[in-house]
Image 1 (cartoon, one colour):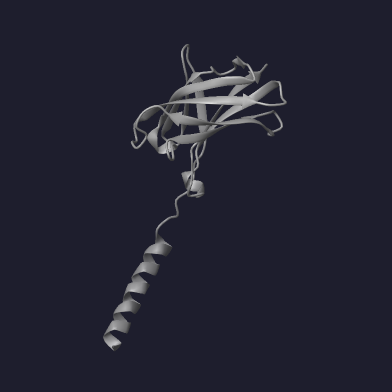
Image 2 (image 1 turned 90 degrees about the horizontal axis):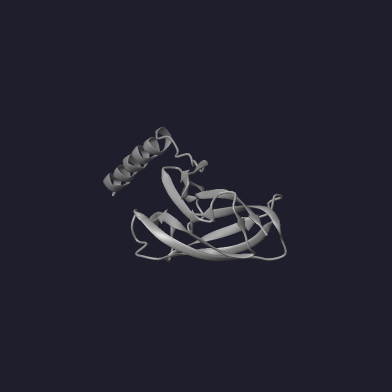
Length: 150
């Protein structure tokens, strides 16, 4: 019996040592975006999201479609959320991107989303958000582009 107690004590001490000495992971949700003639590429923590439409700075109607490619890790149950926010950060519209092919991969997966904006016109931010059912901050990810809602 004493042998088991001593063994458990040693295991606890070893695990505690590793928990204390290993550095904690730090979330990095910094995102940058670049626009070329045909697509907007947004990079967020080694993740590339390609937005085919709308282009960065585009004028869009109150109902519009977002298309592009995102890594399979952005999807949960084949979708991820998209938001439209006004300059003060208030939600003006929402939608969900739906995977157009197998999403259970780390490779790029094409998506399509129908977005509806209600009660707002003017400059806005289109925000694509990595679906994060865990709620853990280290699993967050997002990218944004400016648009104008007509």
